[in-house]
Structures are given as C-alpha cells and as structure tokens.
Length: 134
Image (cartoon, rainbow, N blue to C red; front, side, top):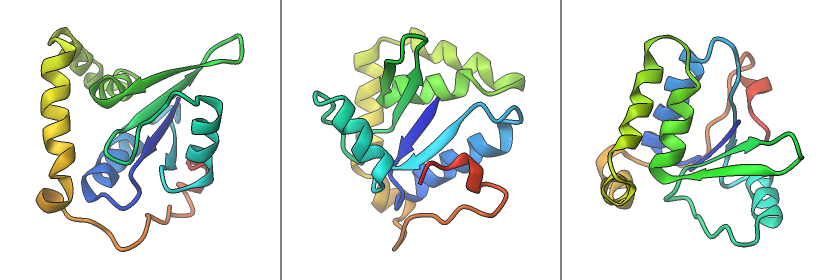
C-alpha cells in the first residue's frame, strides 16, 4: 500500500513518522502529494480529485488495478496494516463515514494553523529512503 500525504503538513508528516516507526514489516510505502508519484496516480485515476487536504492510500490488486482509500478510510486502512495493538483502531470505521469525514475535513481544513506547515517537503533519512517513491 502506498500512502500519499501532504509533504509540507506537519500533522501529515507526524502520521507518516508514526506509521514508519510501527511498520516493522515494511508493508507501507510513502509519497508526497507534491511529487511525481502522486501526479502519476492522478493520471491513472482521472476521477481522483483529491488535493493535499486528503490523505490517499492506494492498494495494488492482483489484476493490476488499485483500490483507493480517501480521507478517514485511508487513515484506517493504514492503521489496519500496522502490527501490534494498532489494528484495533480499524474498528473506527464502524462510525458512519459522513460523521468520520466531517471531523476529518474539519481538522484537514485547519491543519496548518493547528499543527504548522513546513517550508519544504520532508527529506527521508537514509534508512527511510527505500520507503519513499519520490
């Protein structure tokens, strides 16, 4: 699964850091939405209108297509793939999507003011570099 995130958002980068630290099996890959990998994803999925306010997770399927998760669904899809005690958080999906996404969008709309914004996209450490598409 590839997680596409806003590379200048401090909250988004904290979520990526959280996932990297816990993904001991290295099942997840990451790409900034400001990079070429996200542009390629949008080219493959012309109906995808998500911008940097929406985390996107893409899971490859055996037939070569991808299943896309957006907003809170993407967050829960990532958490469900983390080993240890984090998988139980996927049950947050039991909350109806309109309610989950209302709060997701509320935080997303104010994320820079609440958590800050970086001047540039994150630079992965040498150990993390293999986890990032671009």
